View (spheres, rainbow, N blue to C red):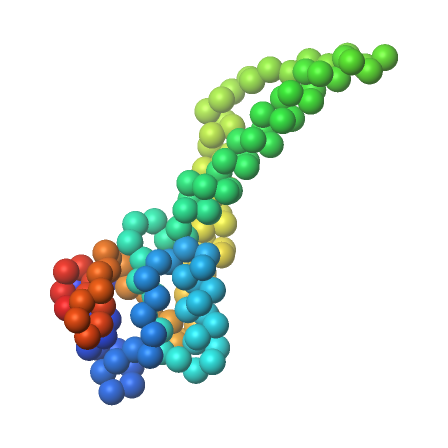
Length: 141
């Protein structure tokens, strides 16, 4: 979206009932809960939709950790009698591509696709800051 004053435009007498700053898992949860209770919500995010966990935190790091664990387990299988274990990284770019595909799929399914399901939530893209009397987005009070 473009420049937006989340506190002067929108629902109910020109105001949202709630402005949620941050469109990660906690922000989405707060916005959805408020909308389910009847509030008109401005969900304000800046950068990639979904926040840290899905994009650069939990999901991608744990995907790579599991890949490394699998490699390690295969390599250490020979500690058991009768088992020969061999493992190597065949194509690192494929590992990264699979991680990126998972991140994109989860971002779409758990964040982008949910927005349209909640009429009371308006997503606003841009940096937010608290100003006297409300919240400014994209530098506009």
